[in-house]
Image 1 (cartoon, rainbow, N blue to C red):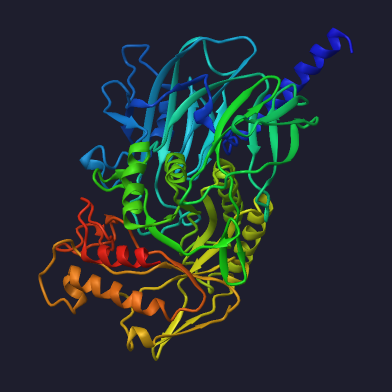
Image 2: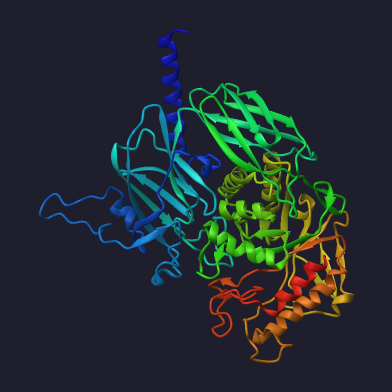
Length: 600
């Protein structure tokens, strides 16, 4: 091929890539993975100028254009000059007292300098923005993204200017009936740019994605892929694991994809031995380093098997809130506050409820030997029949899996929590989502959680049809709190419509105000530690009667903010079901759970 034809082909490919980028602006482009490994990265974290827009006037005023007066009679009813500064990453609710319960619109601005470089591409990457984000660069809209807990990016190679650039983000955390979650959820709806923002510079062709994990059912064979993005898609690639003296070579096809498969004698990751290897992925034009562990997770009969051996899941539910600061958790330090408390309790798994938590949390859990249950915010009253909802669910599923599929600590993809059989379109939508999940990743457990059980004559009945499509029967039950005991816990009978599956109690518990001794401890109305403790003692007694029980997961670790909790004496805007107060004080129930986990 002549030099002219090669140049023309390259220009044509670049034009196609630019067109794809333009078409992607409406939804936000799929983000590259393992951003933290990128050497040519510039953080845009720090202080951003912010305007609060309760009336949604910014759209009409076109604040992203930042117009300035040109004549004596000109004026504009907005300005970032003198605006309050908010920290990014961070939620706006915890940074300004007047924004504590804001569900609305905020405009963020950050200026940055950039020097353009020949042969380089530039991406603007967001770890997460809750919930809707419209992104503008130098007065032009470059794209949007919906979903408050997963990453997205935009290529700005041909948009960024030499020198100073103005980045403006409209953040809208208002609830929507067809949102994920919808109108109904039991936590503070933290809004803002809640995770890292980075400029990432790459070569013309870079490693966009890869999957390096043990294939389903194997303890020694990796089956995965490498995906390149750019004008030179066909390249030699290799995977290196220096500690194992392993080098696997392959070649990507004209679409930039190489399927890989290799075998080695791995030291397997487990809670007792969280072994992680340095893995290096190389192409002719890029190199990425990752820290990857290898393990197998599967269901066999009524057991959950980790690395081929039955395991009892000692879990706890966690919300993404730093309890000491009352803010959205995002940093490594935030993650350690939560995860160290789970380790002290004796856990081997954390259920990250009810949405994908930060990548920092997932990585730190893996390092500490904590298995991770990652969950989509498909919570309660989702409008499954809305024509937009299935696509939103699929997008969020793919973004969740794409980010964390190489994290061996992640053992569960949970696709829904407490949805109701009578909701129109629920079953069809969630069955389809389950099939999509298994097609994306067949190596982890896929779970739906239900609370549609019956309880009569001290008999607990479990029969939600979603369990047909779930690897385990995951049950939220609050006997002793929302449902009074109907007999002795030791005499409770369980009738499960799926006797050949493992059963996991994914939520149980009750509320208590730390230090509350304000009334009889056998009455719920006084939120006493003694009443909560009795619930846990009774639950532990009942666990012996639960068929095929493979684990339990109390709700939850720390008391957390929830505006719907309106008891002015005992709740004060907090869900008080924590085993620990928001200050880290251990309630009596904590010791019951600690002893139970120790016995298992």
